[in-house]
Length: 165
Image (tube, rainbow, N blue to C red; front, side, top):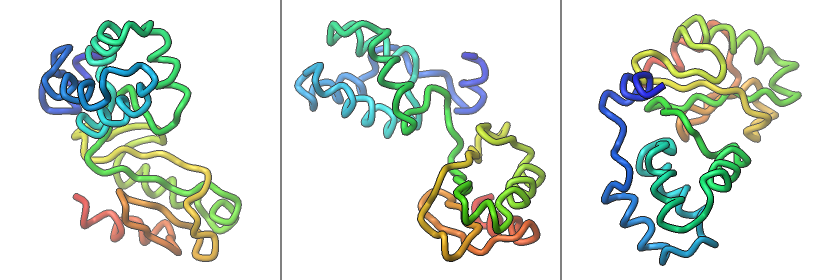
């Protein structure tokens, strides 16, 4: 797992208790009641929650590591594995599903060589299907980072992804 993280990140995992995490703990006054905010800041810094940093937070706050992992796995917003530089979120809601999201999903998988829930080998893209992105009238839709692409067809996926390669 550690080698996969290193490969995806292009660098070794940050050592436990990095300066960035120490600064985050200080900003939150080392208050265990603010652990969700701390995890959000750690993820914003690293793009995921590195295992060593979670252990450090646990030790520094006196919060059991199992509790930290319970929080990190409960909220879908947290990632325990490195993510790609570009996040692809394909809408899987009813309107998108009815209007061909499955065909778009297949096109994304073929174009990038990544399955749902995965990250490309070059760590450029992570791909997931989400329940709704709020573009039902223009379905099927996907987000790449904060950009929204609507009225997709399997043949238009390549063009939509070109600017992120």
